[in-house]
Image 1 (spheres, each protein chain N blue to C red):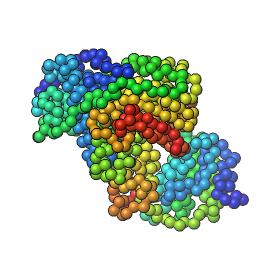
Image 2: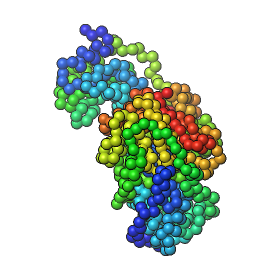
Image 3: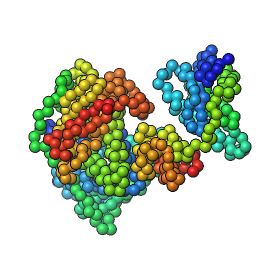
Image 4: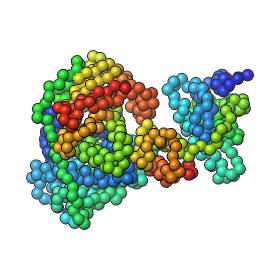
Length: 424
Length: 198
């Protein structure tokens, strides 16, 4: 069996491509976006909760599919020849994107992946371990990633399967182990649609009156060196970030909703609402912490003259994370916001994968947009509150929270997506 | 002589430094009947204090029954290095009295007050209508108290059980739905069993 040599130094950041017009970011041909461990954990938890669908399979297969496409492009880009080189590139990519530290050994019959540091396990431990126990492994993304590595190197998509044999979130000891083996029969898996259905050209959107210079914020944030540290974790803004291929999120959320619709249609709206909540909790913690950070003080704060600028500042940051062109068209102080997204990452995927939708399907954005209003007007982020779970629960308990409606949807045939968030 | 529960709590909260909260709760329901918050924290979640105190009373009752099934909860002491929690159950009722005090406050000063509240409040406590709480309601309330992200726990339980959230909220379930609910809560909390028997 081949053992993995020390990780080869490759320059991953130089392969990041920023489409400044569409405000999209790609890495080895896959759109990539930043999200935090609160989002990753809540979304994964939602998908794996129902016992009547195989949520774990959705998570692991989707990871295998999307990572297969990205890894294939990465190996080609770096002209990797040997198995050792390919293992090393896979490990370096995993680390760079904030998923942790992983090393591989094995051959065409299968092998082992050792996860000495894990975003999901560490994120879960920091968020939940003081409250609850965990009895089941958590690294479904890494499991799919490991299977994809062996697929690309030794065979083709769907030829390998993987299973997490020990998980640090369960054992409470360092390190997770994933076993990869040849599937008895290759499974039919779907590769990623890559960048998806992009907008032809950015649409002129009438941005609301603000002192915030969105483009200046974009430039400043695109320049931040956000990459995995020695533990392969992106510790920033008091959360753990990942630079995730966005099609992983898209695939797991849409497959989940589709399976729920088929098996338990009466619970479909519950599933969608929980996906929206993953977006809400993401914005609350990540943007809340960004708004309390030195980076915000340096880049955005000097532009802020009033409370509606806080909301604009939040959406300017949102449009720097690879999510597409987010613009607040109109902010009415403490009352409502109207937001347009031209080329949302969710629609790019949806339009490349499904027929035209009959209902609005930007579930993440539907949760994220009201969260921006809640953090500014209900959470009073300007006063720098401590962003704890108790504080978060209190937001809901006090009531009068903002909710959003997607009133225009590109996935339904509109030229762009538009949302209204208010307290109705 | 105080006339009602609020007045009783107010009288025995006064005249001693370090009293944060005095309340009377119902351990069957996990609810508060009356409370006096002297902590200076307006946003202190008194309902949560009563709910967790109820759990302590109930757990202590189980503890007592291990030694002698005939005994009942009398006195419970808990807290942290900064705060002390003193509780006494009102005999033969689901009601209990709680004092949360600064840890520097002398117990000998607090205990007589607790006993006075216990004695004087008896006459003002509501009649016991139902000793036995609906099992579904007990399970749902337990989940809300101990699951992470409590605002969304009913939605999670809906996905885990196939039971609509509004039915879980009303806790009007068929007997056959109790086991899936029990299992769903266990799964969320990552534990083998709950302190509620079916």
